[in-house]
Image 1 (cartoon, helix red, strand yellow):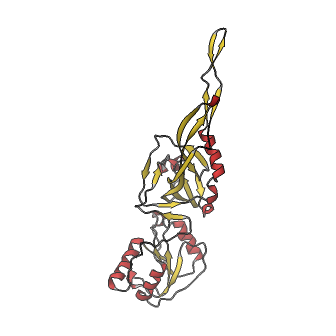
Image 2 (tube, helix red, strand yellow; image 1 turned 30 degrees about the horizontal axis):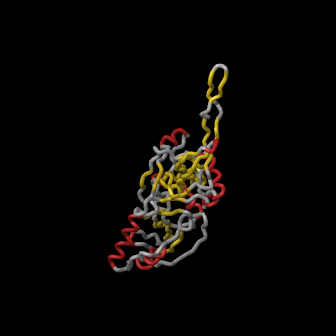
Length: 312
């Protein structure tokens, strides 16, 4: 998209020239300089043009404030693939002009129709890999999503937190299907099947009950956990063995003078790991990306916050 915008600006703006400035913390990428961009009715004599790539969160007031401090002086035109959060209103249009994603799309579309740009189809076998850990999954791919256990409004109200921006997202996890025999005392055994959630965010395993339903999700951003949060095979088997292990009251009785007394001892039933069958598939946990001075990931099931910086 950045190259497309730069090419179109060369055609449709006045005295366009590329420029480069090092602003590593900026969410906006420098595109170029121009003396006028007639398509947007801008003629200030010196326009610094920037590009806001697509991300999960909308552009916030805090981002604009930081950008204004670090950016060179002049009028700034921001061509954005991100919506603008309501906390940005009103924007000082003597300093900034943000072109919304819809406006950018219409601008590019009109350039294609006028012949200034030539559109071509993307080959079906092409693939694009994102390097920032954020992925978008298509509607055609079946996305199984667990239900959230928290309500965002209730969560924020109980903590006295207000005025933050939020964007729904999905947190990647795994469901393990385990089948095997539980061995009890005296050689007794019992067949069992378990559905287990591996939540790499909280680094915990939990058994999912039959009442736990999963739903399909529309196209939405998702984020992967740090790779080190997934359990290795050996550790996974140990933890699964622990979680499916049962303690049952014994069925035998002890005869005394007063009669037969039922045993109160608990017997351990353990999973036969040698014969157990394991299978897993990807599942997603609902969550939100929220901005509380810095970006945080809010887990939709345990209500905990995780630092986004540590995930990259």
